[in-house]
Structures are given as C-alpha cells and as structure tokens.
Image 1 (cartoon, each protein chain N blue to C red):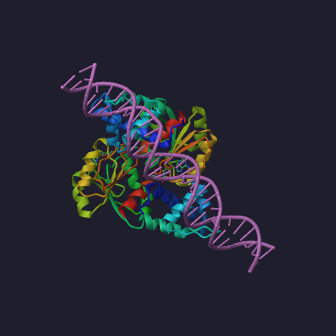
Image 2 (cartoon, each protein chain N blue to C red):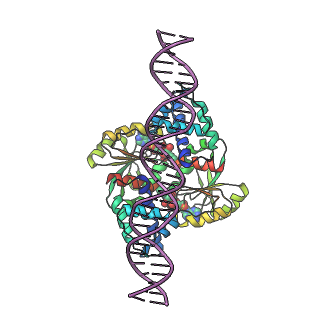
Image 3 (tube, rainbow over the protein chains, first blue to last red):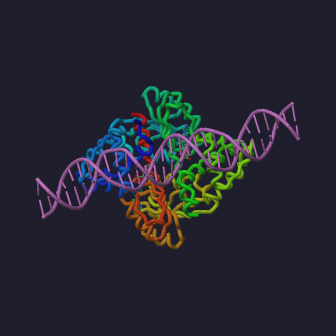
Length: 204
Length: 204
DNA sequence: GATGATGTGTGAAATATATCACGATTGATT
DNA sequence: AATCAATCGTGATATATTTCACACATCATC
Ligand SMILES: NC(=O)c1ccc[n+]([C@@H]2O[C@H](COP(=O)([O-])OP(=O)(O)OC[C@H]3O[C@@H](n4cnc5c(N)ncnc54)[C@H](O)[C@@H]3O)[C@@H](O)[C@H]2O)c1
Ligand SMILES: NC(=O)c1ccc[n+]([C@@H]2O[C@H](COP(=O)([O-])OP(=O)(O)OC[C@H]3O[C@@H](n4cnc5c(N)ncnc54)[C@H](O)[C@@H]3O)[C@@H](O)[C@H]2O)c1
C-alpha cells in the first residue's frame, strides 16, 4: 500500500536522526524507544512505521541502524537522483541553491531560471542564471521532472501552468499560495509563514 | 477550547487566500464552497473552522470577508506585535530577514545575531549583526519572547538551551533537528527538507 | 407573500492516526 | 538450561480529524 505523507515524514526524521547520531558516535543497533525519546514520538509508532517498510527488529536488541537507514533510503528513493530546476533566484531561491543538505536525498538542481533581465546570464553558486523563456525547452530537453518554485506569489500559477504543460511531475512550492495542477502532478507546499499561525497564537 | 494546530494552519490559509483575493478584486462576501474550492478543502471544514472562532455566516450569502479576516487576525493575535531575534545570519537567515511578508502577521525582527567574528558588526538588510555573546543580555533587556533559529544544526541544541534559560517563550526552528525544551516553550519546526520525503517518494 | 435555489450549522458517521496492552522473542544472568 | 528483563510485533482501543446528511435560514423571483 502507498505510504501516507505522515509516515513518509516520520521516516525522514528517523533517517535524519540516525544519520546525525551515527556521525557523532557510531552505533550498531538502536531501539524504538531510543528513537521515540529523541524525536518525541510514541515507540509503538516507530515500530509500526518500520514494520510498514518491511523492517524487522530483534527482541531485546532493537534495530540494525545500518538496515534502517538503507531501508528508508530505498523506500523513499533517496539513492535515485532527481534532476530539478529552480525558478526564481531571489533571496530564498538563492539560499536553497547553495544548501548542500539536499544532495543526500538525491536532489540535484540542474539549472536555475529567473525572469529578471538583470539576473539572466549572471552566475550564482556555480550556476548560470537562465531566462525563463528557455524554461520549457530545457525541461523537455533534459526530461526534468521536478521544479522548485521561489518566485513572487503573483506569478506562481502562471508558471505552474507552464510547468505542467511541459509534463513536469512535481513542484516544490515555496510561494505562499495554493496551486492548481493536474491530478498526476504532486505539489508539495513549503508555506513557511504557516508557522506563524502556531507561534502567534501561542504567544498571545 | 484551545484551537488545534491543524485548525490554526487552515485559518492562516483562509486569511491569506482572502487577502490575496480581495487585493485583486474587492468582494464583500464569500461562501465556504468558494474558499474550499480554491484551497482544496471540504466546505464543511471551512464552516466548522469559522464556527470555532465564533464566525456566523448568512444563509444563501456566505460570510463577510471583512469579518472573517478580522476574526482570524484577532484570534491568531496578528495585530499584536511579536518582537523576535534571529540567530544565524547565513543564507537562510538572510533570506528570512529581508522578507517583508512576515510583518502583516505581527512578526517584528528586532535584532540579529551571529557568532562569526567576520559578520559581527557588519550590516545586513538594515540590521547590525550582533555577537551571540550579547544574546542573553539583549533578550532579557528587551523582553524578547521569540527566537528564529537559522544556525548550523550542530549548535542548535546548545543555543536552544541558552535561549530557554533566558525565558524565551517560542522558537521558530529552521535547523533540521529536534530540540529539547521545557514544556512551556513552543518549538515550531520548519523542517524544509521533510518536503523531499513526499517528493522523492512520488517521483520514484 | 409563496416558492425555489443556495448556503449555513451541526450531529452522526466515516476515516485516519496514535496509543495501549500483551504475547512472543531474544540475550544476559545464574 | 532455566529464569529474567528488555524489546519487538500487532490486534484492540482510543483519539483526532474529516466528511456526510439534512434541518433550517436567507435571498431572488414571480
Ligand atoms: N524570503 C523569505 O524568507 C521567504 C519566506 C517565506 C516565503 N517566501 C516566498 O518565496 C518566494 C520568493 O521570495 P524571495 O524573498 O526570494 O523573493 P525575491 O524577490 O528575492 O526573489 C524572487 C525572484 O523571482 C524572480 N521572478 C519574478 N518573476 C519571475 C518569473 N515570472 N519567472 C521567474 N522568476 C521570476 C525575481 O526576479 C526574483 O529574482 C516568494 O513567493 C515569497 O513569498 C520567501
Ligand atoms: N539554506 C537553505 O536552503 C536551508 C534549507 C533547509 C535547512 N536549512 C538549515 O538552516 C540552517 C542555516 O542554513 P544556512 O544555509 O543559512 O547556513 P549558513 O552557513 O549560510 O548560515 C549559518 C549561519 O549561522 C552562523 N552561526 C554558526 N554558529 C553559530 C552560533 N553558535 N551562534 C550564532 N550563529 C552561528 C554562521 O556564522 C552563519 O552565518 C542550517 O541548519 C540548515 O540546515 C537551510
């Protein structure tokens, strides 16, 4: 069965936690309780999630860290590279561009685009910024399936329409708006300012 | 009763949608179905959420847009300013710093801090970058209740401990790790790379 | 002012998600 | 090798969240 979004996100957290932990101190095995403790999750939940991706623990011992990491990378497809384009090389786009942390999940930003004539042609973080006029062509030529959207919100839907017309399969949307896409295109929204809802409410 | 996180996030989305919509074309009223359609939510959900914050619609008409926006801002505390400090003026911190979009939710970044001697004293987006050595003092002096954390993940917990010891009330955490805090401190995680779990899995 | 179409408000039902409870399994200890 | 304690796997249970279904309210129209 298809794994649900909540499960996928927890798997990602397990993976990250195990990576960070083993980098500091190599360990062979870990128990569901230890992971649960660190991530503030119920131990049962951890075992259920592991069970869902076919992991088997050993009574009295726990799970092989190595196995867990491998299984997660496998299920999530982190070892499979995803070529992506980034659109909108502004403040946020620029930050994402230089971030080395995405690589280990298979994300490969292949090219970056902007509509600003003052930016097109310039270099940034090793990329030459391309004109959005060449976007469609590029996506088709290189068979790009993922786009990272960091443009002003006003142009989000227009760009989305252009993207989906090229046959793009997923959009990582950092612009604060909902996008309309065909059913087979995945939109993952990274609506950063939603965080303020919880924060402002709590501080009130 | 306390509003749940999911409700708060939807309220934020309603508010954003209504702001964006009325900016383009002023309208007096809107129905739950219209909002639901645009945001891909069930209309009943919209009505329940509105009901939860005391909003009453009118049969055959819908809701007064003005009222909805006001009620949400009121409930969420967006009209109440939240003074914050930002820690870690790097790529991501720099982007957040210059983003004008947070202001309308009451977020006021008052000061920014970094530990890098090469950055301390320099100016960025109208702020003079302060040394983290002066962080505690500043928070206490100005009674800051919110910190935005954009440092490398290795120092997240150390900084968090220092922050909580000053009596900070909330942390907006952009570093990819779980933070341990006292029960009365809210941590809102903006774990951007979690998005890759959904995306990578979908593209596989 | 009756009628119909369109919306709201909300209890009930359905679905999704998280937690509990406990037998089964394993490794350490005696 | 028998016992014990720690840990897993998982069905049952509890909780949270969403959706359905429908009575009631409102406005436009005739
Ligand atoms: N910066 C932040 O901290 C932050 C936080 C939350 C959300 N966001 C959202 O992220 C998006 C980008 O924010 P930013 O701060 O980087 O803005 P920015 O203005 O710095 O960057 C936007 C970039 O998009 C380019 N652009 C404009 N129209 C374009 C088009 N049609 N095609 C291609 N490129 C185009 C601009 O030239 C610019 O380089 C915005 O939607 C913003 O709301 C940003
Ligand atoms: N840049 C991105 O797109 C991105 C995406 C996802 C997550 N993140 C996370 O956001 C955080 C910041 O990322 P970034 O790309 O801005 O990194 P960066 O290296 O550009 O910035 C980090 C800043 O923190 C400062 N710093 C280091 N130690 C500090 C300390 N003890 N006290 C105060 N400041 C300190 C550094 O001097 C630097 O200015 C990281 O945890 C990263 O994992 C970034």
